[in-house]
Length: 319
Image (tube, rainbow, N blue to C red; front, side, top):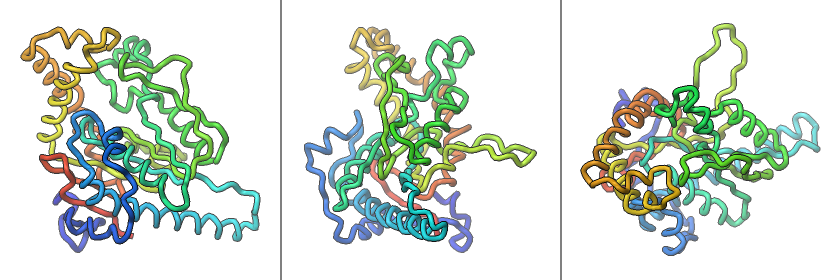
């Protein structure tokens, strides 16, 4: 992550090796069993329980400090405004990064760890997949080849959802996405009702969009975040992980006749690999370079992974 630290003196981040970072766990207990962790881990993700102890317990402790500080500030603001009827808003954690880099595993592990704090906070997890425009709309607007790019999302719905959460509204609904049919499920929603913590995961959640020249307020998704995490890795590694995951899915989920990608399971291995390489080069690599990597430095914390999918370095934004 040298590009984030042109000099130690001027970098906005502090950098730690994985071994240094693991020491910040202190006495944070490991509350996940190996069987529980196996259910949280994504397909083809080799991360194990030792990685949870090494990286995620320290991260859980750090997030605990941020949440407690946020709650203290809320109480101080109540006193400042002499307003006792104001409802505390959820602490929102954004998680960004490329496809196949391990965002989903990170989000699910953090959800479980945070929910098991002694205070037993209510923790919910939402991904941006449900806010993708329906395939029917993407085909109509010639955007199927840009699925996952910023312009393939219902940005208005995303902002309304996060605004509702941050306003402490009751029963805020988020649309549901099916990875089997590769589409939003019509009329199906998940309801989020005033959690203490919301984890919001997606490849482009740190995307700022265009700033207005007239100075009008234009909200971005990250405006609603209290803490943002970026999962990082070398481009060549992500490419390798993406192809390996695609080929694994070809042997598993793609074999379901209802799968949008079922046709790929019928191809030879070489033909399927060529399809995966095309999807990577024409869609995912372009999105990574144009939209995802440029947002990395906007995160509060960056987890940099190595070839074995394990975190090698942690960058934490200075206060």
